Image (cartoon, rainbow, N blue to C red; front, side, top):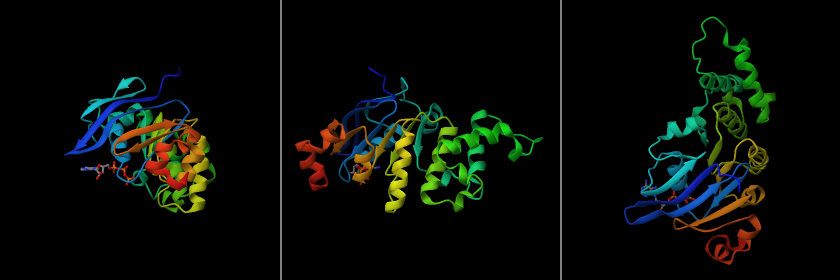
Length: 249
Ligand SMILES: Nc1ncnc2c1ncn2[C@@H]1O[C@H](COP(=O)(O)OP(=O)(O)OP(=O)(O)O)[C@@H](O)[C@H]1O
């Protein structure tokens, strides 16, 4: 069997008497989109926070690329390649898309001071940055300021930055939120290709996107995973239909 990229075992987190994460186990395999769905308050964001390192679990383990994440803070997990998006504020708005990715390439290379060469003509930065924009389908917008990009394009740019920084897996919490139908469609198409760059754990309420994208779905209800399976298995699971999907299935 293929080794999972991310492996979560028996994770528990309580807030007072509330079991926000109740013995959750799931994994993320190479090349897959694993969607996490469930009603409001089911504990999806709480789970993502524990994986990214912003909440500490009460018990259980999180392994990423074979390494135990306990004791590593968010920055350390990000450095290992656990990419958490979307953080629009991380973009330098007045800089071009290319320049934004170049900053990430530069950070990865660990060479922040380049007094003798004008940055924009430094091929060791422009070439990998442009290649990254091509990978996310944004090369045609390379010289446009981040502030001028559409909502969806900014998300593509953030992912180019995350890939340039070395992200090996993505945690996305409701990426479709705030997008119109056209934007959602474009982002769905983009995420579809992105899984081959790095697998994605996707929290999403937009069921059209989830059913179009997910290789597997886990359903969280009251902090517990009540089912994990393919789109068809989940759509036809009587407990899932009763607890969550209702007529949406
Ligand atoms: N910092 C916190 N302190 C106390 N309770 C919290 C905290 N964060 C989340 N909760 C509670 O934990 C439960 C799970 O919340 P969470 O935001 O993880 O659910 P969710 O599935 O992401 O919901 P939604 O789909 O609405 O985003 C909720 O009852 C919430 O009120």
